[in-house]
Length: 369
Length: 104
Ligand code: FES
Image 1 (cartoon, rainbow over the protein chains, first blue to last red):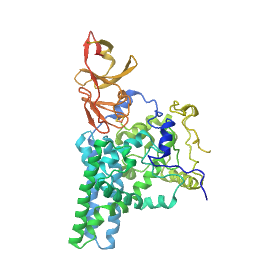
Image 2: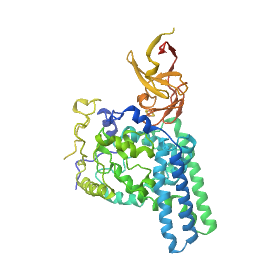
Image 3: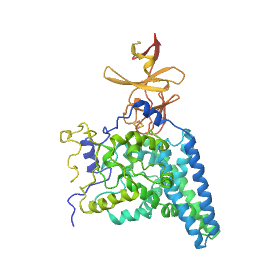
Image 4: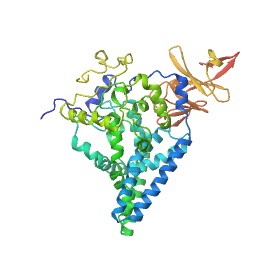
């Protein structure tokens, strides 16, 4: 079957030019009118919640990893490896994210230490991903601009399933580590990593290569798989499924090129265990609209935003009940997307901007619904 | 040559807070520090030109609301990525309960 509609998600192709021409790059986005006084309360930083959560997090690593190693190679070790893997390959996603924003802890060095550790676990170069994520916040799900669009259209179903096994992202991360370590920054990444930051990207990749080599050497000398099952790309892969499960809910099936986070992001209620692993990023519309608010204040921000936001999904089942059919449909009809219902009176039209502004920001992309 | 211009009464900005002030086609950020002093910088972040007045003042730091870049608003020094370029600062004084800025 030939798709008439096939978008170019690279950051150096025609869609990148088009996004700028249409005024979709660096645009003005909808913001819910939360009073400044309340926002100031919600933005306040504190070390206490993140210190508590980090101590629990580290203890959970010691317990699950320790029991897994102790019981290895018995099959009884498998559940402990599973739990350890989720900590290593999934909870590191949210720690990378929150500490990258610098909001998790009030004290800067604490953010930085947890950021570095989490980046290593999830295999995201700390220097490169800081800049990639800044772009993701400037141009969220704008094709040709956002380097963090996880599921592109038409949906590539096999790849989406492989994400749950951690295969494409870990393989991509290994290749990138070698590329960086060889002194090269890919052209696409040069569009968002400033020149003065690039040596840091390369230096970190080289340090990481040494650490990975040391882990492998340790396994060889010990004649045991245990070191590589506990550290490095393997736990990043076998533990990835939870962060993919939660991550797909962020933007899956929703609009591209919409300058309103309510139309391209999703808030889902999750249980306390998932919220601990995910550090409350299930309040994803709230986070994108107000990235200054730390993870521990997102439930309170959610309450403030309710009158302006679409109804959140009641749980993961409700979220996937709309996401799976949407992704399957987007495999056949890539133009189509889910359109959340906005509360009456809160609709918003971005101010026209750019060369073709007279056509509005949604030209060619009005959801086919 | 100094060009002192009245901004607002001191009471208009809470302690440890920031206010946007537009004047002559330009935009500024006026800060009230935790120890009662006033400061002024350009109003837009040097990263992607977002109004800093939507951000958070913590001691002598302003954190940008868009990507959490930080500046020392006393000196304009860029302190945390993604901001790399310093902010321009302006002399400020208080006269008869009014914050005054020197637009130079
Ligand atoms: S716009 Fe201020 S940090 Fe990016």
